[in-house]
Image (cartoon, rainbow, N blue to C red; front, top):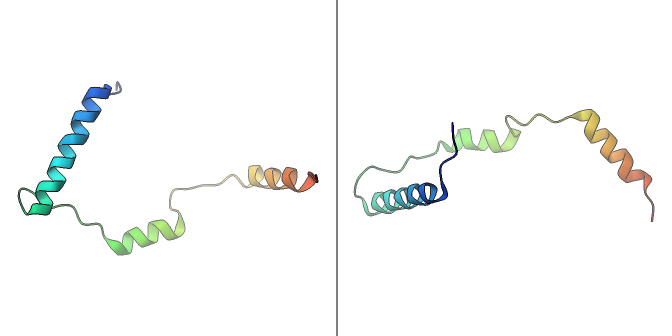
Length: 68
């Protein structure tokens, strides 16, 4: 799928801002409410972030070796 042009991205962003402001005034659709419990779990355990242990180990070793 092709990337949207800059003007279309700006237009979409302005449209979203107008929707948010209308929802804050009580007009139109209500804003989506985030589930705080789920959000806390995601932020706490860094879900979906898989680290490369070998790469981290090598990076730490390289940084430990250099003494200036």
